[in-house]
Image (tube, rainbow, N blue to C red; front, side):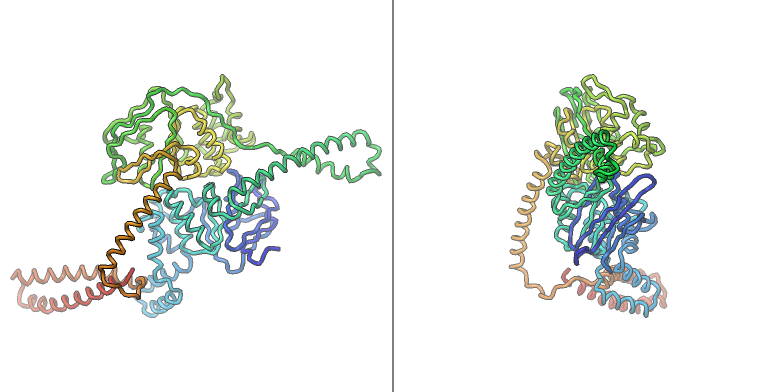
Length: 627
């Protein structure tokens, strides 16, 4: 029986797709205010389970029960929108009942139906949501979406994901179901979202590979492993500890089963005459014992060992390079000289130029001035943010064989493409599947395989952590830590950056780049100290100004939605009236009008001035309201 505060109860859930089993007889629940992380390997079916819970996908058997009237917000891994919609239209379309109320009010205003306007206005008053459009713009701006009139079809995949996340936040659901919410967010946005969800009383069920997020936000972890869902009451650290205990217990159970199986097999061979009347239960349980003993307990993680590839003393010199797109500066007279075995992290806000910086190094983007000098021994390996453009009609094994049939793994040893793919958790059966059948995470893993199999000595990884599961990230971290070459990583994964990089280039925008000697957590601690100092200085200045300024009214409030709309309308009308006033004065002083026109203009001028005065007074009144 679920507890009284359970808001989602899943019982005996089974889902298969063709011959692939996603979950089998899985049961779990989510309680009110719980923050649940949902983890598992790529291709295990995490996104499918979330899609089932949201009602977008069916299931074979079992039951899914939500608390009656529960408001649920679902963030897909890849959101779908009408490409012709503007950002604001998409928010109003997808924003739930609050957005629908505002939309109906605007439609009533446009139609000129006073009765409908009054009715919708009363409904909005009752719901107290006049500021909804303002809230939309505020949340979008927080997620760095500032062009509210842009068409959804013109946005990048990351921008569409952020619009979708804004919509989920705006709907204020009681249960958030989020599929990889941190993908395509920069580090500051991730920290903001982490703080928001931690402090909120909402319930959360989230698929993510962001381990700091799992550590700092989640109070329970569910793991999808081998079609079964396991629960762990605690954060990510607790999950790691208890998961290891479970794996150790499973290994011990299989070892015991193997010992018993050997004894049972011996008994079955030596005492066939006893089967009819002695220890019948032993024969009945024999097949169950065989199945248990055959259960694999091998660690399925990829095992990657970096090969020693020579790299000379002259590696990469960025000599006073400048780059801009119109008025937007990316680099300004930037100089940097790489040393051997250097591991560099590149961080900064979306659009600050991180990917452009990488593409200039690789010769994929021209510099405006300066020069990039590359050493003769340098062999780049590049993992692009946009991923590899696979021919999805090819089989997995053929995609690798097109690059090389045999791969050098060092020490004079070579392995076949099939063997190498097994390092990346592609068993033989999966290697013969077509690429279009792979999950997003499996495609990312295959792409990583194609990069590393060429044994580069200078790796450039642009957002390599998107769509990779935690186990793959852990192995990649170990590989990069031991990698005997140079490394540049652009990533929003704080845990990953902290483990791998030696120091950072921080892109602040407008060509300003800070070279910080340390990892990301050290940088943020230092940065927060600077922010606190700036805040204290600002507070001191504010207190000094308040002593000199007259006391403001104690009755502070925000402009309502209608008042904001009225203020915007007044600004346009005042501008038009000022122009009309100037035109009348110019016409009257020009002497080119006849007597009738002069009479009409002379009559209109005081009317115009009175309207201008009235509207200006009203605008000033609205502007004095504390915002």
